[in-house]
Amino acid sequence: MKTYMAKPGEVPRNWWVVDATDKVLGRLASDIAVLLMGKHRPQYTPHVDTGDFVVVVNADKVALTGKKWEQKRYTWYTGYTHLRSESAQERMAAKPTLILTEAVRRMLPKNKLGKTMLTKLKVYAGGEHPHQAQNPQPTELGAK
Image (cartoon, rainbow, N blue to C red; front, side):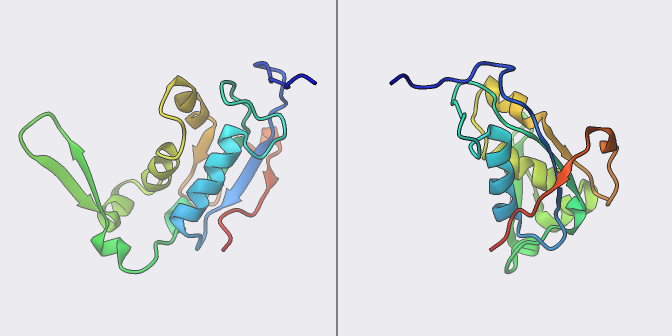
């Protein structure tokens, strides 16, 4: 019995559309990361990108539990002596798609393969997306 290893281009790519309205951020991001990596397939191979494309609409309506809108802080280093920081509420007002994109990015592998997986994620703040030609199938993610 030999172990099956998928080869690049061998696994068909599906397109999924996800509505993020009132979904908890972490639960939704972990389900999206599974689809992007391809772990939902029996042909999953760790060193090959076997994942699907995911289109997320209404990313500006994602939910955070508790008081995370005020208390959750996003920090980053600018190269100068102090760190920059902003709350989740401020980040949502400035760039509504960045919160979900960064949550998914941090759940993917930290290598070149993870970067290519992230390019298959398309996040939109509104309810419309320009990927109708790919015929994305609706799916329910982030359920409790």
